[in-house]
Image (cartoon, rainbow, N blue to C red; front, side, top):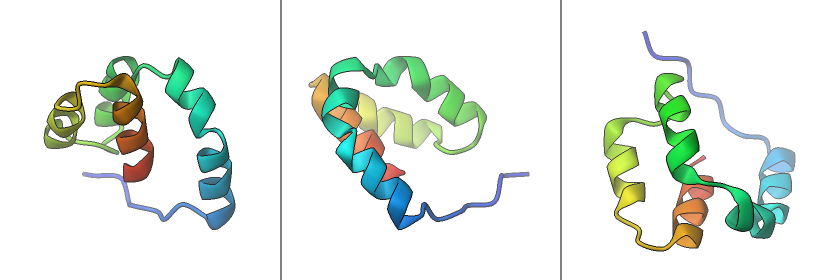
Length: 67
């Protein structure tokens, strides 16, 4: 059974957006994606869409936008 979907609060969204430059430097989407899939926050289709992005920064931006 899939986990219930919960909307992110505006406050958390602001924190995430403020942290985006640092996330773009440090976050490796390929490392975190298996866990996000395991927790049913993303699926294989989402993973394929992110992997289609050739630039790491774009991958991170797309990932954060999807949350």
